[in-house]
Amino acid sequence: MLVLAAVPDIQYHKLRRAVAERFTVAHARSWDAVLDSIRSRPVEIAVVDPLLSGEPRGQQIERLRVLFPSLPLILYTALTPQVAAVLLGLGQRGIRHVVFARFDDHPERLREVIEAEEMHAASHQMIGQLAAALAPLPREMRWVLEDVLLTPGTVLTIQQFAARARVDRGTCARWFARAGLPSPRHFLAATRVLYAHRLLQDPGFTIEDVAQRLGYAQAKTLQQHARAYLGLTAGEMRLSLTPDDAALRILGGVLAPPAALAAHAS
Image (cartoon, rainbow, N blue to C red; front, side):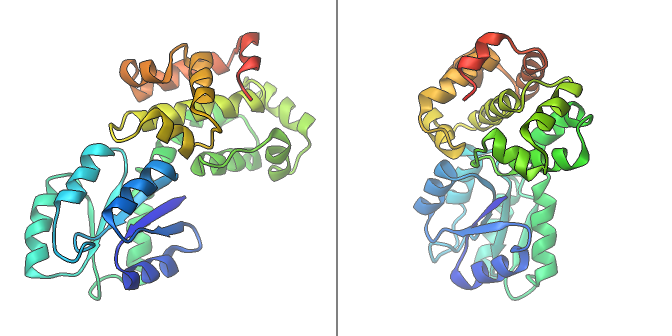
């Protein structure tokens, strides 16, 4: 899972050392870089400092909240009277965690807040929606699927997926069939559409942004998959379906996928 650290260098290095075993941490040194990273990379959690531009300002963080409401935000900043006033305003935006540099940013605390917000990340929300469908699969295969869902920018071939699960392609396909699921190829393609729908609920993302984040070579391929698995264009699914509606439609479709989907699930 990718964590974006929009904080000064010292705080970035402390955060990276604290969570490196479980999370990848990318550094953004400006607010423009923050926006570019969120739109182009599979950022699941953002750690931000109101002092990133040198003076305490909450407007850029409020903007992130408006553009990307599904993105968990953690504040990591110095405790000063000026910052305190900014934090009061940001507290009304639903930000749950604040870590103060040189005060309570020891590694255990940093790991604790990142892990707490991990459960609110879009990928974890989607895994929860798919849990019942995945339950009949062997534990190792579920682990690989969950890992794929937690790294949405990674696109695996079925051979690569089977290798990670330590089975051959035929065994992999048989387990999916026993679980009442379509082929792994269809299932992975359908879950990418479900993840794309969840991202498109945020007004800060364009269809092109989402396609890039999810590893599609072209946005038109995402459009093809959206039509195949949801019967809607990406723009239509953004406006007409809630995340729960999309999950129900995906699960209903992939459990008995029509043969026509084979042309699109590449």
